[in-house]
Image 1 (cartoon, rainbow, N blue to C red):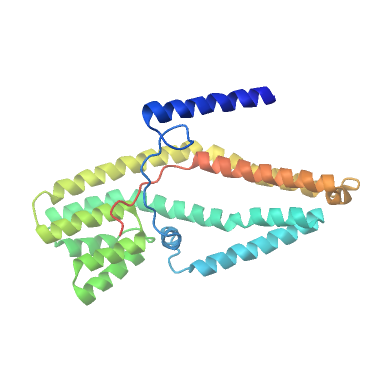
Image 2 (cartoon, rainbow, N blue to C red; image 1 turned 120 degrees about the vertical axis):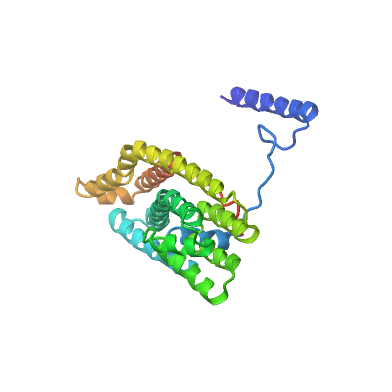
Length: 296
């Protein structure tokens, strides 16, 4: 075994030397590093994440408090089941990820509603601004007022900003901040250019954008339908081990067995495996998300 490890290390070292001398690669990775994309601050990303889940009114501190409460409840439940502090802390840490998963599910549902609605909204915008002859701001507010319930508060806030300032750029910034959606960003940028510069090609640009969003929504619907059975089976990763652990309390000296050093190690390994399988399955099932290229 030692010889095999040394052989692999020597082969990888020779590979690094070759790529450094011949190809000019740096670092210890198997390939060259790509350009690092500058990421926004963590607080900004957290605020945007909550906004996309429809919880823009929830402060980050309140969300952290919810995680803390779930951690305490999960630790207390594990302490009752296993009677040992170390598995209770590990299980509490795992339980603290449940609010994040629940909010992520809500965020995915809200984004799915927006992805399904935007092609129709863009098409209505195109018809109102071209055939009906309405101004771009008025068409935007009319379309938003008749849109899905989840999107109406953002359009209402943008409409209030327009009535107060009549500044269309600031109005679109309000709408984009309220929705935090990449399709909304692209649509607002198109409307802003058309409003400020004019032109006759806004109809074609909106039609192309609507068709692109329609195809993207169709592909995502198909992918989610294919994943439905797998997502249902993924829940058993949590339910079955927890039920077996609870059943073990009533078999012989099950509770005292959990409190032994070997029992605590076994519980820790089991919780770690469940958490790893849950996270791994979620990463595999995650659909790629479109970046907000026009975000401020």
